[in-house]
Length: 80
Image (cartoon, rainbow, N blue to C red; front, side, top):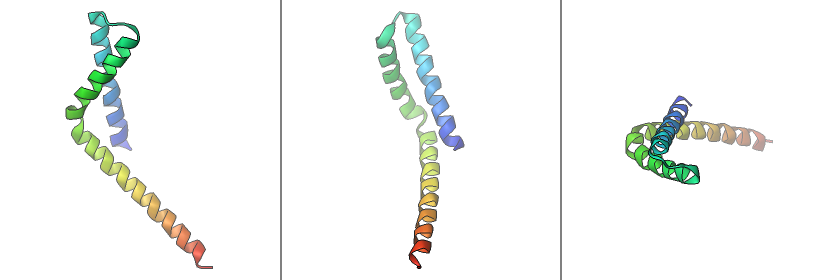
């Protein structure tokens, strides 16, 4: 959970930094948002790759744990 929160916060920080820089340059409106989204996506790909991998591993572990609990509950119901 911590990795997901940290990754999301860093993505937002990169987006807002790009938006502020673009606003200072003179870009406004919907163009500002679209260009800031594109720039932040491009910048975050190499910068946050290790963190994205950790987040993915964490989420995969949580989903697998949930699925095993669900399977155990289903097997318990089937023993009737």
